[in-house]
Image: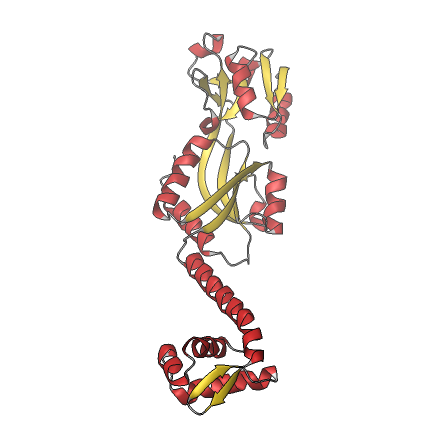
Length: 292
């Protein structure tokens, strides 16, 4: 059963005349007649009763007509969807974002992406690094923005975006606010707000231990908004990526001796062809003026 044959039958059912049906389908009458006959042979019964130049639907043809119409409608819907997919109209894009990545600069990037592709339908979900990698592998995400800790390039296709330093975030009137930069030893004995979701947390803790720096965690949370709110409330300081600080009133100072930084990248699965929306995302990421 071919779509052209179905179109011929539907046109002939409307016109009850093979000549006019052929004109509607932009084919010759012999081609239309041959296509309808081939479909009747495949189905094992006549769809039309031929009485000279007069054509009528058979009983079998009347029973088949709703099914053939449904096939034609679904085929047209599939063609429309495919065209929209190619043209990025109503094209879905599922983007994962590491929960510790600041949203302000990322929002500007996504706004530019959608202004260039207004038909794109973007769904953003946050999560930890392990879950983002799992969702990418399972096809639940098309792409993810995450921190490249080294070695990810072996399992993911990475597009570098930007690098950001870790800073010390403190409340107003904190004694460290008068410094231009803060060393780890300046922080020894200070009250600390622990960011449990930070993918670099263990590395920072090891650096502190190795430098003999003692930190007292008065508050712990996996939520970035709670961490910043508690710092602003005066509970203690926090280590944060510089572009993740979003709460007005917070003071940040560069962390030096040692400096700590992370690389942020756009990740997709290697060897997996990009859908049009994902390809547009990668192109936009490569041309966007990221900080630094």
